[in-house]
Length: 283
Image (cartoon, rainbow, N blue to C red; front, side):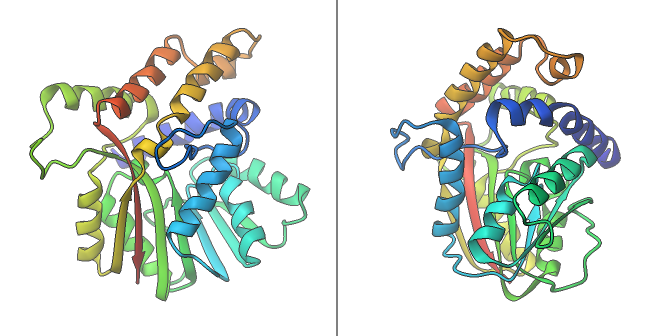
């Protein structure tokens, strides 16, 4: 199942990344719209602001060796390289993304500082304890084994190194709301199919798993309200894209009914089911 999922994720991003860059830019993740989600701004600026806010929340002040897990076309990796002046390695399942990321790094003069590889985040080819920071911007939701992913991050970090991740979650189930309802499970299943996600877990569950793996200094934060307006911008961009002529590959990336599916994702935030969680943990 894991191999089949990896192939689907690879094919999805191979086919869609070019259009995503054209419409959304180099950052393939949510944006930040203020703590209460009320600051209106261009979506690309909101995405850059999210990186800055996550780094500030994580209290990251320096890092010489950084691993960007699920690097896309290098959006975060180039920001991290410029910010900290260290070496950044990005990994992705998509050869198309890796090649485009290299092109972008070379174009801005960072080709010697930033490298990109096609690799499985659950079994990376890197030595133990080689990184000061493992950065995961919306890649955790793609991992078919959350425990194995956290263990790999732990293995790769130097003692005192930090895992800093932002990921899609579902609502906590330990509160008065109880377990997920059949309706909520059905809602999530649609998102799993569209975005090739095996499953998501709650933010408190991530915290417990990180502790089990051996991490300390665990901090969690729910930024669902701050990022939810991004889906409004996504929906607008989809309707705008429909007015343009597109290639067969573009149509594959934006299948019929895609705007409705993105509205479905926005509704997940509105009903409190889909959450946006941050995790910081120290090896």
